[in-house]
Length: 289
Image 1: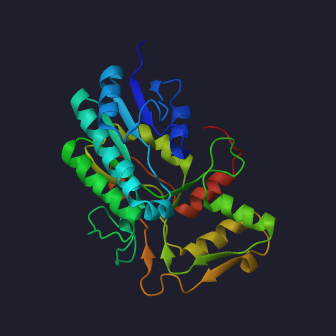
Image 2: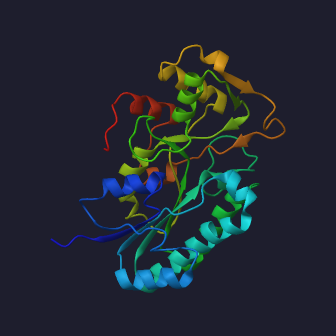
């Protein structure tokens, strides 16, 4: 039986490596290194796509450190915007189906409270959010059938053997082990998502109509409340003395990145609420799904 050929860009990254592991037996995977597929070079992208002809492309390659992007806006634009556009153009040329990763950071600067839908007017205040929004718009313009997924901050269990990121569980465990404190904003609302929920739901995305979709866990707790609750679930003692409320940050305008994911729910794609997702993750020892 001939397997569908799938290209995963950024396959050495936090999400990409897990997608590669999950799909390793079902698909004929293309997992190029940066030296083999530099998304900053249009000629290289086109040549790679024409040579290998993947049928499905999951574009995860990005600069995702928001601070780094703020300090290096030109590099961020080359990778996060131009790289995504080049992949979209190459997919149009070769007829490949494209799924690309966006971010809840596009909502950074939105003054509305409560879960935010895809129709909200966006005015991101940081470079990363602006570039992710531009990438969405230009990818859709070049390839309307493409699907962009706005992801939340993701996490895996701290003992996972695969590549880790700086995430809520890792940061909490590190602080408690080192006896340091975490100051967490009381005026911030954002979802956090168990990365394996994203991975498990990815195959359902292949059948979505082209467009932009919120894709992750909802949340109604402030970041400080969420961190405190998660510390309790992790069995970390005396959370109140180490997870401190930061009442100054975002006090002028609440930072709300919480997403309304009802649109993907119409297609049978559902995520746990952020706190429920952590509970589920903590109930199982790590396994690569």
